[in-house]
Amino acid sequence: MIMINERKTVMAHIEVQADGRSKVVFERYTYNGIRKRGSKIFPKSATKAEIKRFMAEKEREYLLQTNSAGTHITLKEFVPVYLEMTDKWHSPSTQASDRSLLYNNKHGIVTVLGECRLENIRLRNIQAYIDSMDGLSSKTKANYLMLIRAILGVARKLEYINFVANPAQDVIIKKSKPREIIPYTVEEARYILKEVDRYNDENTKLIVYLALTCGLRRSEIAGLQIKDIDFDTGVINITHARVSAGGKGDFEKSPKSLAGYRKIYVMDELMKLLKKQRIEKCFNDSAYLLTDDKVKPIKVWQISNKYQTFMNTLNIEYRSLHVLRHTFGSILASEGINVKDLQYMLGHASVVTSMDIYVGSYSENRKKMTENLQKSLFVS
Image (cartoon, rainbow, N blue to C red; front, top):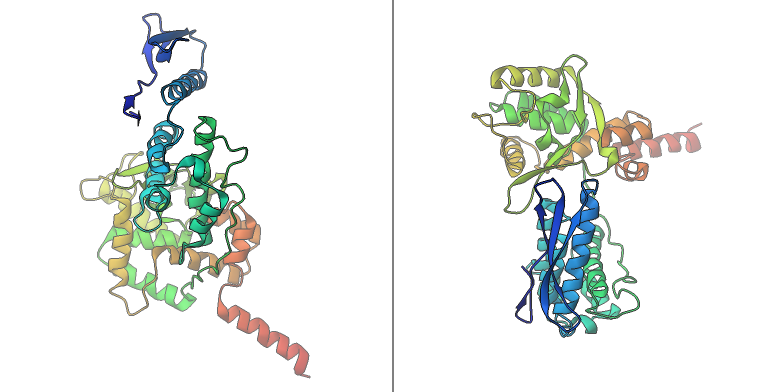
């Protein structure tokens, strides 16, 4: 529940009537400041969205009336109001992400700006805050900025601040040099596959094969279920992912974008592993592919741990699991795959991402092009 100036709000709730209609009960104030309970009964034809919109509006009205004298609160004091209003619309993973950005010990929004009064926050404050984030990528800074903008946007709608424009709207994020991700070479990729074939953990074998020969993200590997695999045609259907949400456990979610929904043709070597897993684990159609001995899905973080444990046994530089996905894309690009096909197989929302990250990512390719140009220009 929300606490402002030590006055507790009572949020709206739904009661289902005997005839199936929905009754929304809410707190309200009369014209002379007396708090009373109100209600509205919706017909059976009303949609959940209509009812939720009505509830949100009543909650907003109640917050405004309850906190009419609370216009001088700090950002730290307002954040619980923001979370109370937005958590109901956000997935568990988004809730966990918001809290990480808010309360991070070094760069957290509340950690750094929490004592600022809402009405005193200006563009220069937020710009200085974003500029102070040394070592963070432009994308991470953008995530912090988007959350600040959202918080101040809600504060403005609730009339805690009366700015004409959102103070975070015109903040500029200086582009930082992207960290170069160096994929494994073809020879190194072959070595990894050869060694994992001799490894004694079937889940690790599947993790490496799915990342290196299919280009799947960790979340897509974690979310893969037996029903997603067509054993007759040799196709994997990517339709969902599974992510870790802070300390709240793992949750299934949709792919990162619509482009994430795709079909991947599976190599014969991987299909043998998949069929072996299906037989040995006695799956039903809805079971996750990666499971423990009790056929319970392994945790998302365990996927990275299993991969790292395996890689530490090899005579090769350790790089993160995501590098296997980059290696997959880079090999395809070096083999001359059409960029639109590369975009599809990697599940990128934009072809620009595929072009920027993978096309020509092997230094050998760039060296070869230079050598070819030299022959054209100087060799008679």
